[in-house]
Structure formats: C-alpha cells, structure tokens
Image 1 (cartoon, one colour):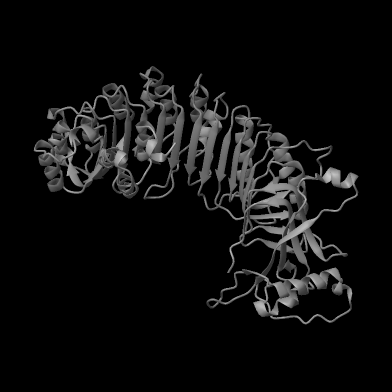
Image 2 (image 1 turned 90 degrees about the vertical axis):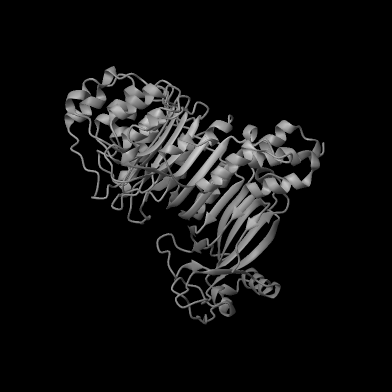
Length: 607
C-alpha cells in the first residue's frame, strides 16, 4: 500500500503528532492529504493579542468562500498575551462550539475581579484548562480563581501555575472542597501551591471529607505544607493512580516542621492508603525524616500496588548511605509490584564510599535507573533478584561482582546497559556477557575499566564474546592496568575493538572442536592530548593509520615489550595522554581489547 492510500483515520492520528511546519509540508505532498493536514494545522490555534483574537472572531462570523470552517475545526486555543478574567466574555467562546482546550499564558487577577466570574456565561464545552497566573498581591486570589473555574462545569483537566515562583497561590482544604463540589468531573490536577496549615480542631473532621472519586492524577509542586495534608489527601482522593509530589524551598529558607510522634500516629491511623496508586514521582530538596513522611509513614507501610517510582533529591549534603537506604527500602516495600524505578541523587561517586545496597526480590522490575547516588552495585545480586530486568541505566558509581556469590548463574534477559561515568573491573563485562546473552545495547560513556595486563600479550582483555550488540557506544571510555590506582601512570591509551568472525559457532562448540576464536579487528584507537585551548586536557580519540596498526601488531605479536629496551617517555597531560605524534610512547603501557561476538553499530566519537 502506498502512503497516499492510507486510511484517513490513520493519517489523522499521524497528523496529531507532527509539528506545524511538518503538517504544512505534508499538506503539499499529496492532494488527497491537503484538506486533512490543513484542518490539523487549524485544530489548535495560538493568539498573541486581544486585537488578533477579535480579528479571528470577525473572520469566523463573516467567512469567505475560501475560508475553512474554523468554528468546526478549532479544538484548542492558546492565548499568549496578558488577559483578565473577563476574557471569558469574549465571543470566541460562543462561536467555537468544539473548543475543548484553553491555555492562558498570562492571566492577571486583580482586586476588581472579585465576584465578577459568577455573572459570566458558563463555558460548558471546555474539558481542560491551563493557566499561568500573574497575581498582584491579593489575599482573595484563590477565591477568585475557584469562582472562575466554577463556570467550567465539565472540566476534567486543570493545570495552574503562578507566573512567578515567588508568589504561588495559597490553597486551603476548603479551597479543594469547593473546587470539587462544583467540578465533579475533574480527573487531573496540576498546581504550584502553598498549602495553608490545617487547624488542629479540623483535623479530626478530615475522615468525614467528601471524596473526589473522579480524580486519578494529582501533580503538586509545593512551597510550604504541613503533615495533616497527607492525611487529608488520602481521604479526598481514594481512586488516585498517579501522584507527583515536589517540595521545594520557600523564599525565606528550608521547609522546616516539627514532626512529632503524634504526627506519625495520625498517618498510621489511616486504614486504607491510596489503594489504586500505581505511579509516584517524588522530588525534594532536603533529606529529613519530615520530607519523606509521605513514604516512611504512609506508602511504605501500606500495601500500595505501586508500579512506577521516580525519586529525586537535590539535597547537597545527602550521603551515599542515605541513598542506599532509599533504594533498599523502596524495593523491599514495593517488591511484588514495582516495574520501573528511578532514583536520582545529587552526589558524585567516591571510592571511599562503601554504600552497597542489597536488592530485594523484585520479579516485576523491568526498568531501573540509578544516577548520582554514590552507591556501588553488585551486578550479580541485581540480576539474581531482578529476573525480569530489561533496561539498566547507571550513572556515576561502581559496578562489581560479589565474591560471596556461589553456584552457576542463571541466564538473564537484560537487553540494555546504559552507563555514564561508571567504574568496573574487566571481569564484570566477562560475567555480563556470559550471563546476559540478550544484551543488544551497551553505552560505556566515560567508563573507567580496570584490570591486570596479561604478561604474555601485554593486553587488558575485556571478553564479551557471547554478546551480539546492535549498538555500542564507547565515548570517552578509559582503561587502566591497575584495580587500585587508576591515574595517569596506569592509564592505557591504545584500544582495540574486535569481534568474532565465525559467529555461527558457540563458545562451547569451539572448545569441543579445539578451535580458537577467529577475530576481526574493527578499529585501533588512540587516546591522546590536544590543546584546543589553554588547560584543555580532556582526552581526545583518533583512529590509528594502517601503518601505525602494522607497527602495533608487530610490537605485540613479536613481544618486543619483553626486550630490555629503555622506553623513551614522552610528555603527558594530567590525565596521562601523550600528543598524537608521540603515540609510540604508549606501546609499552599495553593495550585494552574489547572483544564482542558481533557489533552492528560501534559509535566512537573521534576528535
């Protein structure tokens, strides 16, 4: 079937995912597509000023013979210029009966707006609204907003942010109750708020709160809050499936609350906590017990069927031991249901860190991401306990094999290993290749791979002959001849990438036939120093020429490194690289060979 013969239903869905310029190009590609893509362009319109809005209204009211049917096509309106509450009175909302989505980028709320919204015509057709509010200091701003939203009775999706992060809206529990009383269809709430304190005498009334049964997603960026809000939300949103909880610093400093035993007892008293919750996205700027109350005293102790957790902390003094606890506690608490887990810390890995999390048995975990957490990961422990893991992303840490592991390891279905700045021994990759034979994508960006040189070949051998890679990325990977001292004196600057030529025979069959592997050299690389600007000591990488490869091959095949010849040392950078013309000074240091079964696409950014 030709593209021009595709059904209109499929073309219409494709059009929804294209940028405006791409839609325009498609409208010129095929006559049969022209009307459809033109309609897609007009489906969502952007207006910058009130004058432009009036012009569109006049165009719709007085169409020409060539005018498209705006009134039937337009479903989304984005107004970028400053506007006020009285925009609701514009004719645009009366002449666009199919308008469903409204985005006001600069909504100004002022003193004179108090009470006006109740006199405006209701916007019965809108189902989603996004507001960026610019508030002149006004204590009634929240009440005006709620009053405005009451005129959109069928609203399903609400997104409210302050025009300036310095002055977010202040919401009380009464604000939420009023909002849901008038908007019974609301399912999605996103807002940046200050949550005002709930008075002690009202806390005991929270279990009597009328629940908002339609709400399934709550996305809050909170500048200030107190513990009864967790108590309130569990009763208000019993059918919540997605919770995004971001706490940040107020302008005056950190969020600091007295988190006492009575506060803990209050949260522990809840019989059922978000029984349908599946996704949690959590961000915090401190690591106190208070900031994690939502986990420690609410979610982790309940049988919440969470499938996805994204955790991020920006606390600058956070220690690796704390993040180790986070990893262990989360995976233990949600071990039966967790499918995707991401933890992003704010610390660099240090060798003196001994934080090594033990993984609980998580049979459903498919996608794992650990970034800037300062912890070391035992690959065998991870694979043993996360049997369904298919994607593992690990940034800035140490990957190792636990020597306490015994027995023959089971084969594992890991498909993607994405690392950045990870330290590992060469034996880790031998183990990885033997056990994870479905591995297809491997990223070794800025990896530091170490191990002992062979006395016979003067090579650091990274053996991955069981691995058939679709993509291999070795951007700025570095290799060292010592496990204990990875520095300018032990760095290996010559790298060989190779693969087996006879991929039809398994390693076991080769051994039975007493055959050695037939190897194809894909590339000989040299890490060198080039001062593109003062203090530019980052290692560069280049392909060695054919003549240079001949020299290298002769040197190692004839074992010239065993001859007692004085090595002429060259000038080196702080990272241990020579200039390109002095590459022979790196011969005696040996070479690193990364050998795979097959590499379809090897990505080595050359300098």
